Length: 107
Image (cartoon, rainbow, N blue to C red; front, side):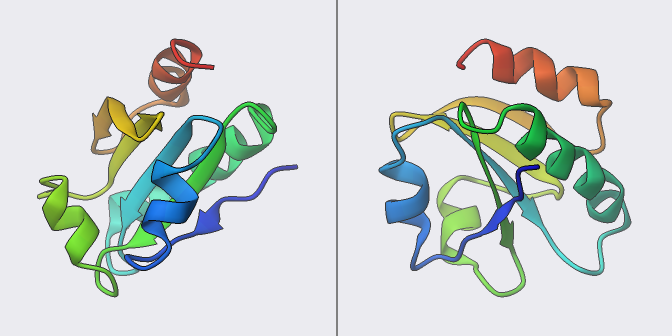
């Protein structure tokens, strides 16, 4: 079973931009209801795509530089990175099938 990795502004470059595999990054906050609702889906995706996809989470309350750099204005926002570039984006609570659809384009 995969597990989402916690990343911060300071580990973002090494964990996300320099990753050899595509990365799904979940921008969230503890007080955000839809973020809590999407969390189990994010964890499932970490298991479903283990080895082919890195799944990471960033708490926007503790890390403000990265969300602002990528224009994250609403949470949850999930960005899909490949080779250091954003190749997909999902904003808000979506069904798991929506996540799978964008992930399958890059893995």
